[in-house]
Image (cartoon, rainbow, N blue to C red; front, side, top):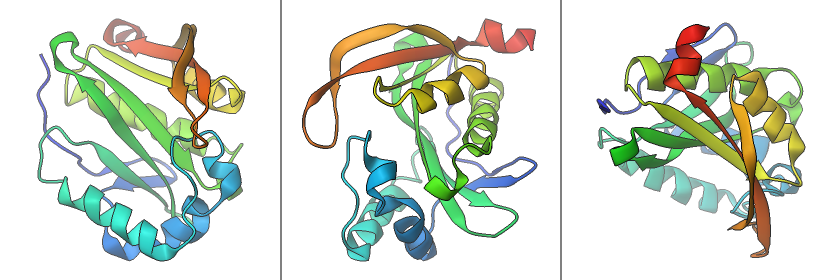
Length: 187
């Protein structure tokens, strides 16, 4: 049974995962939210104006009072900059299951940063919240995201054909991955 406790601070060797704050708008906008390469496979388009970023941040911050809301800002310990985000995008309570989504500044791709963040969030969600299953998916045209999922201990489960829409509104196939509590406990 899930024990919702909301977004709490998590630290790893290189990262601080914490709640977003309005002061993060500049970093978010410049590091990933306005980058078409980063948002290419997302469901949302890149922000053309920092006011869009501020609006999005405000809506996220307003939700932190809920104990079933999990959204972390990814801050680099080395630079102190906000470089991405990772969150629970869906909770399926009757199955003790959640789905995770994430986004990272292009400058930090291929450095193991997102894998480090994803493993930390998996550990939190299994250990503190008691989820039974954590899943994630990506547009099949973005295999790099699947590599992160595999490195975090998730197993590939298959492709759901035309199960999503990209940020241009086109249907896309989604590759699905998951890790079970029983898989996590073996590590």
